[in-house]
Length: 143
Image 1 (tube, rainbow, N blue to C red):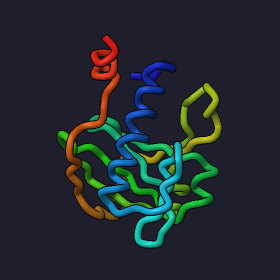
Image 2: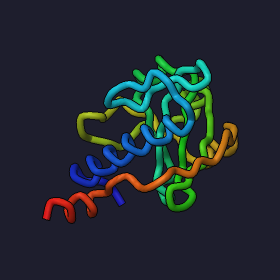
Image 3: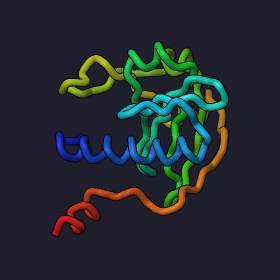
Image 4: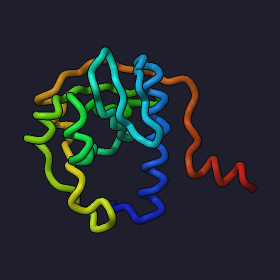
């Protein structure tokens, strides 16, 4: 199902919050504000998160020029993520353009989980403590 502006914003917020939690669990350094770019074991990486049913992750073309690899973190259960690594070079070769018609149109490449599994490397599985807030829990808290 395509995203609208609201669902896209909620997904982006969840992704950034979850990536930050995963970065801490992976002992990342140089975590940038409002970005999923960081360093892990002295390698510049883009840490991209995906819900269980999400089949692709996207990275901006600009970010691909700044990182050595992309880590795709796919949710495999409540607060559990498989971390798959793919070099930035392989990501560029495998990517397809986003279908976005908004501000990100023409700026993001997408790669499927299947491609990460076929050409990448499973690095680890991470279990995160607690859950980040969702749009539903945030609405409940405001009421």
